[in-house]
Length: 125
Image 1 (cartoon, rainbow, N blue to C red):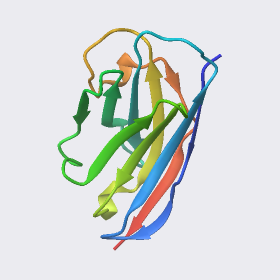
Image 2: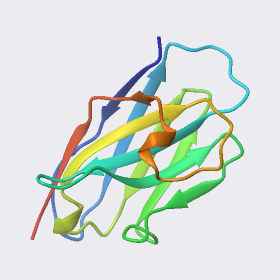
Image 3: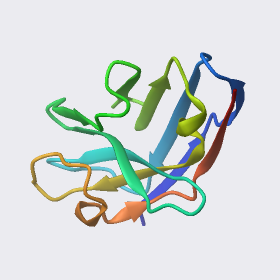
Image 4: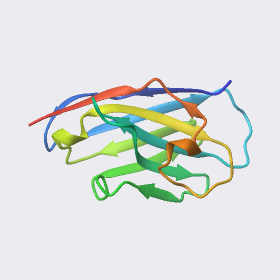
């Protein structure tokens, strides 16, 4: 069974940086995988932040372009999200997601089957 465990969240001041990690387990072989980061702020719907696939195609939400970078370490089965120049509006619970279906990367949560429990990011002004 696929498991995704996020870490790296915390509290920072505006302008600061955090790096989120997502450790994936429960699978040994795959021909294709998409992994992504999503976030949900209080009172708001969950939104896609960044997605990467097996051929390193990436897509970012407009709100984080130029500030966030998604990457993966396939040897460690770990997904990362480097977040720089953080803003108070980045405050949210951040979730890792994965899917093995061959699809063009998108930030649509319907494209993802497996989800982690989330890690909280709080940015103060």
